[in-house]
Image (tube, rainbow, N blue to C red; front, side, top):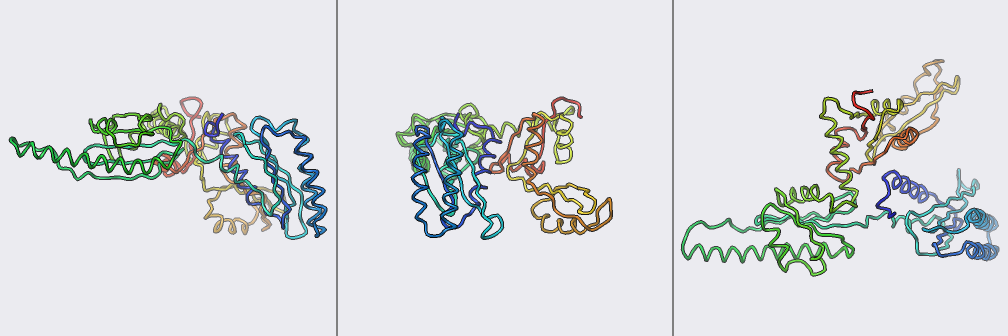
Length: 419
């Protein structure tokens, strides 16, 4: 399965893991990065690492030498757990990570099975882990172009994954049809046709300039309310490499509104795009909200209550949810309290909560036990209950609406009639 075909939670966890690895820093060249492609033998890689272990004995600094050799040995031990790199390869990160300043280094080892096959063999010692090759796998590969056109205006856009990029609009400046008779009318129509042809050429030139930036573009949607889209599609306006990728869609609008309508009406053509899937999910939620026997619940309190009762079939979370779950504990009596705060509230409200007396023993001895991103807490709770999870991006219009209207958290109950 391609990375774009994986579920939103898998992609989220993969992205978060890379972000955490990217933040880790070592001293000098004490962090080992190892990429192993599928066709590489594990035994050959271990032999290679043994040679690097011997070479590291020449490092002058005793501490650096020890840390590098420990990192290599830890990578070797981790490698021995795998009979082969697998179908997509294997990536290992191993190194001495300072825990609390210089002299507190501890060897940490991580392995990642890439979601798509990797083609490089890479061994590198550095002060950081090299995750850029894995981050490349997260880049949206499915790209489509959209042109929404009539005789008055046009818009060109690129759809990449979950966002609309490079949206440009144009006006034709071509006057409406001339209704008078005689030669002046025919002359007017000829001039009008010439002006329209120039407008189509201008749109085509801009479309070619934008779309040809993406050699792997999968399709071009040409939309509009009248025959203009067919005239444009049949004309010699688009580059020859794009013409066999055209998909015609009837829309009520041209321009920017036509682009959005064309996307909504091309779900089958765009079936591989996460953008279309998320639009359908939000529409499903909105349809439920308006029903008298609605299955929709929204807001953190009601969604989590439904989760705890195992009444939630599907959970929607905005991907950039700006909340943390904070747990405080009393050093005197062990009492714990849990609440959620936004990033802004973490600066203002958390100190106040820490200064408040314990609700059980009344001593001012509350300390931070744990702080977790709320999105991770919700995902964990939903997975434990077998609830399907859908992470929604705020990079598109429906995602922004979901974030504003529902504070980024909503769900669908398993059954109608509440809980």
